[in-house]
Amino acid sequence: MNLRTISMAAVAAFSISGAAAAADLGLDPIMTSPTSSYDWEGLYAGVNGGFWSGEFFIGGLIGNNFVFDNFLFGIEGSAELVSAPAVTGDVTGRAGIILDDLVLYANGGLGISSPGGVYAIMGVGAEFAVNDSSSVAVSLESTGPGIRFEGSYRFKL
Image 1: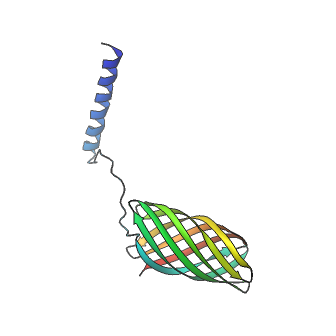
Image 2: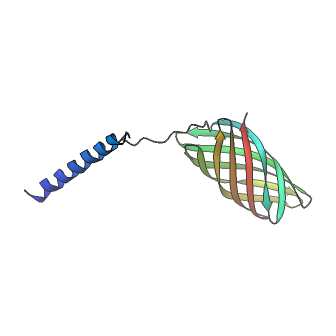
Image 3: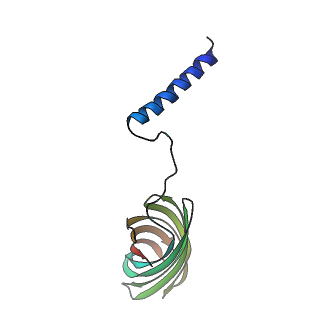
């Protein structure tokens, strides 16, 4: 026997034994792409809050998600009241990957605060489906005025 024959026999033996082991465990030996039990597409609204440059804020948001295979793209607008008397608002876009009931995403956009002016936003976040009509999200964002940590509760419209 030559090395090529031995190699092919070993590959065949491991392939058959892997499928047999999966069959013994009641598992499907063929991997499929994950699909989410939560419908991430569509219009949503929610409440948000967190800390931003040492100040507490609370507000509301509305957005819309678009799903292509396991990828999510969305746009969101929010308005907040900040503990140091200020009002802020922003519009961000986001892009992420859907991992069943979890979305990991990056976002970016523009915000405005009074007082303060216009600022850029860039960040990352994660959103988890709580049930078939709501989700919770956390994000960490870099903004002109400082770092913002935000949590939100979102429900489908």
